[in-house]
Image 1 (cartoon, rainbow, N blue to C red):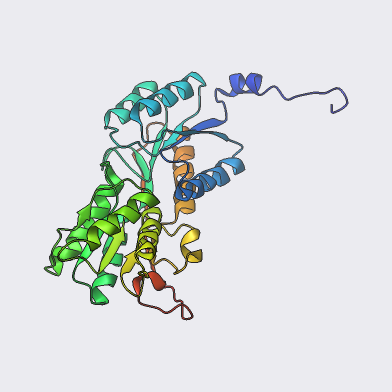
Image 2 (tube, rainbow, N blue to C red):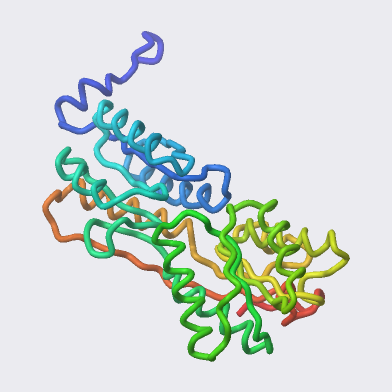
Length: 300
């Protein structure tokens, strides 16, 4: 077979089986290492099942997302895993049902009850990190990051605001910014210039938190010594930054694996009841919040 140059005819096999052994994977920010980890989790499960993913980056644009979904339908993929772009409505799920295309929402959802979903408990994670900062003595805490509304932002803010209300603390320090390092660096400058500045900040994700730490450094301040900084997601760089970043682990690889398993089950049974997998979060304490010293790192 090798000498004759034989190549397996996947198209003919697909016609016999009625499936293409491919799925679509749509993420909204491919440059964020968090999404790279989730993609690795999806690929791990699909590879074991002999399925190839088509990866697309929507760049948070609903119109671009719609174009990719149409292309994937044209390619007759067996199903899609999608992290919905900000602004996506529940109409997405209606369209997938009309197309008879199995669909799993990952990390974000457009409906709290409809459709299959895999994600992390963002609200719990934000409660964990905010409570930690309050236990350290902080009473003026800012929330930085997130200018486009979606379920992940709504859940994070709900957790943050809920803890402040329970402790009867002010919640007037919420900055809507892009999810970039530059935005984080600029935001901390704005906060420190206020008449009654915060002493701590929890960020939408680690990328924004890295920017906040850079902004502090530019002003001669050190995260963990002069100002407490916390991120969210625990991307690999969080443990390697100096100071190490206190954050919340959201298990993106495991979320990707669960999303892939959900899709495989949905491909087998288009009409089964919706499934939702919510993974627990875990507080990771490092130096940036001021709870530990550089030579005394601890995970909690």
